[in-house]
Figure (cartoon, rainbow, N blue to C red):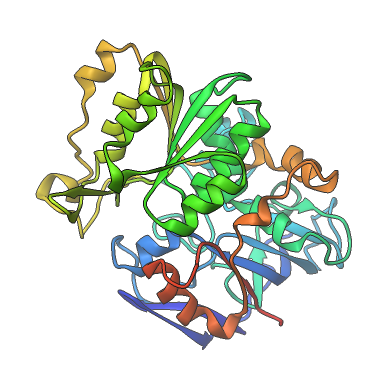
Length: 381
């Protein structure tokens, strides 16, 4: 089958790889109809992880069941399904507690598994014509038949639940104000989810014009951090108090500006949120941070050690929740919001392309050019 294969920093190619096969009675094989490129894929694409050449990318996958193992009972050949990016067993201590992003079974020695991602287990990614889904009864979420709302439903694999998870980590409640740092797909989903949860005012901080425009279109207040200190801009619009809650949808490759020049400053968003959120507020951090970053700007950052204003965090009595999304906790409810027309997350999708155009899509998405904000690939188009 054809698949997106990592060759090295800034280099992916479409290659023929081995077709997946049933390895366990609980497996299914899914014919992938939609698979999205994620911002976290760019970390590997840029060589900012320990990913080795040869890995097949793709953890945001939707398709139709082609073959089911003898032990699968809840899905059948022909069912349309979307899979959480988390590969989870459903029965370990963390899974039964709802922490499916930290499954203790699927990736021995590490809490958590995922498709097509470095250190997240042996699961081949779905930016391919087919993908094997283990523990299929637990990991497959059934969708309505047909192709309707395809680009909405594929976002249930990761970014829509992850944006919602940022709100959950920050405990966003109706009537509260929220600052979201990062206007990429996850940041826009976090802002959108805050509104679904009844937030009174939502700010989105970024500098990319298309992202800020999208934020404004959904009713958020755009804040361009190149036009002045973002925390100060937000305080000026909240009576000097700051927001009730804050969400980091950027992670460790955060950018800062000094004297008109860009520089990477991994802790800048965390420290900005500490200043943005009012005393006794809370921060949600779904943005990715890693324990090892070969491209870190200094020796500490290369080992995941950042200069975070912990003293100020303590002084203000702020709470902080972190960690990747437990997709299974949210995807069924979010699916039903889509079905009933209460949520349309596909507003973030800028391009739908055949699989063969993935190398160009990666390049343009990484450079944030030509309006590339979220790309959905169709392997069988």
